[in-house]
Structure formats: structure tokens, C-alpha cells
Length: 121
Length: 193
Ligand SMILES: Nc1nc2c(ncn2[C@@H]2O[C@H](COP(=O)(O)OP(=O)(O)OP(=O)(O)O)[C@@H](O)[C@H]2O)c(=O)[nH]1
Ligand SMILES: [Mg+2]
Image 1: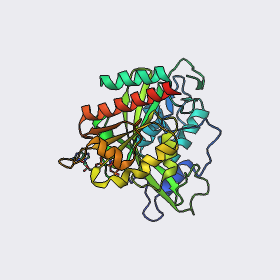
Image 2 (image 1 turned 90 degrees about the horizontal axis):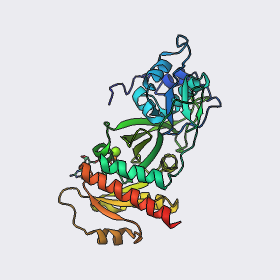
Image 3 (image 1 turned 120 degrees about the horizontal axis):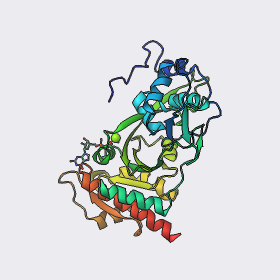
């Protein structure tokens, strides 16, 4: 574990205050569906980052390589619901690219590739 | 892959997933760790007390919420495909979470501890009812493997078509062979329809 498990915990007000503050209670904008394994990646034409929060910039750095939404949440150590809001902001700005397909059951070729891959590890 | 955004030539891999399920303490996290290329990661989902996703943080302050932790690992198959392994949360009341985990999954491994067979019934029911391919992996905690595969199959009332295998979740090769059995089972199911 990262040792930051409780960094957003507020003694007096409970565990939700920090993530709530981070996204200021915003609803998610009309971003694509973000599932646990949805792949996200920083755009190579990312806009000026000076107006971004620390958390947004941290996501941009993490996503220099493609990662799943779940990985971004785990590395950032924030609940999934929070990371989805932050990612939505970045997607809306065009700073983060996202795979738009919803998870669907893999076809035969994909299963064969996974089978070969698992055998090879 | 299709992207939202300006530089469509930037690609991301196709993500696939396998669910590692089973009762409390059956070795789910151990299995994820034994095959994952990274130490298992942990992420938290916010749920209401009723077990429903908190999907939006607006107006959440007054609500009773709880967090459920998910362990997961990763196997990079090649530059185009990445496999994620998700351990289900121990507490069975978070079925909502299981739905999200199971959607689009290759299938599931249901880990069984023969000292507490009944603790894996809910997992088996879940995947059976949703028609999600699964294999049953009997985790051989030292010296406790008093039953044969057939005895376990019978005790759990598992259909002949569903593979039941023995494993040691701590052992990478053993866990690998469970994943291989599951992927082959999923391929057979695909061929059958
Ligand atoms: N001897 C032996 N011990 C095991 C094996 N697999 C897991 N364990 C131990 O059993 C305990 C439970 O394993 P976990 O992997 O945490 O089980 P889990 O299913 O993730 O547990 P929960 O998430 O709490 O439901 C740990 O202390 C493991 O070290 C095994 O194959 N043999
Ligand atoms: Mg566990």
C-alpha cells in the first residue's frame, strides 16, 4: 500500500470531505462511460496545464502511458467516483483520450491472444 | 479502437478482465498476486448503505456511505491487449459491484476452500444465474485437501460441463493453469453457441 490511505480523511468531518472538496460536489459531465478497465491516455497535444489542479496534473503524468480507470484511481489513491470526475474534466478539455467502447465479451481471436499471453508469462 | 479527442493516432490497448471470486478468505488476493506483473493494486468504490453505487458526488454529504475495496492485478498480454484480474470483495452484500466486475468479463474463477465449501455457494450461484463462464478452483490449503475433484463437484452440485481443478493460489504456475482452464472453457462456450 502507498501509506497515503487516509490522506483525504478529515478527522472532524469524516472520510468524504476531501474527495467531495476535490471535485466540489460536481456531477459528472457528459463524458463517455468510464468503467473499471476503460483505458485512458494523456493526449500528446495536451493544453496548457497551469490552470489544472495538482490531482489533474498527477493524472496527466500517470497517463503518459495507457492505464485503466481503476489503475489511475489506485495510483492516485482516491475513490473511483472521484477519479471519474477528474478524468471527465480532462477528457472534456481534450487532454485525456479515452477508449469509447463498453466492456463486451471478447471474441475468439482475442481469447486466443489472451490464452497465448497467459501461457507465456 | 475509437477515441474521443483530437489525436486519434494515439492508441490504447484493448482491456479484458477475469474475475477471481469465492468466499471470504479463500485465497482470491493471493491468486491475483501470484500471477500479476505488478503488486496487486487496491481501489475503493463508494456505495450507499443499500449497496448501490455512488455515481455522482453532488448532495452526498448527508448520505450514509460505505467503501468497498477491490484488489486487482494486471498482465500485459502484448502491446494491443491487457488483462486485468479482479478479486471480488469479501462481503457478499455488494452484489452491485459484482455486476460491474462481471460485465464483459472473459469469465470467473471461483475459489473454494474445502473446509468451508458453503462460503463459495453465493459466487457459484451468481455466475450460474448470469450465464457467465466460470471454473471452480479448489485451493489446496496445506494438508486440508481431503477431497477429490469429483467429490467437490458433487458436494457443490456443479454441472459436468464446468471444469473443477485443484490449485495452490500461492503458486504462479498453478494459478496460471487455472486461468488457462478458464480461458479454454470460455472459448469452448463461444464455440458451442
Ligand atoms: N497454505 C495456504 N495458504 C493460503 C493459500 N492461499 C491463500 N492462503 C492464505 O490464506 C489467507 C487468505 O488468503 P487471501 O488471498 O487474503 O484470501 P481472500 O480470498 O483474498 O480473502 P478476503 O479478501 O478477505 O475474502 C492468507 O493468509 C493467505 O496467505 C494456499 O493455497 N495455501
Ligand atoms: Mg482479498
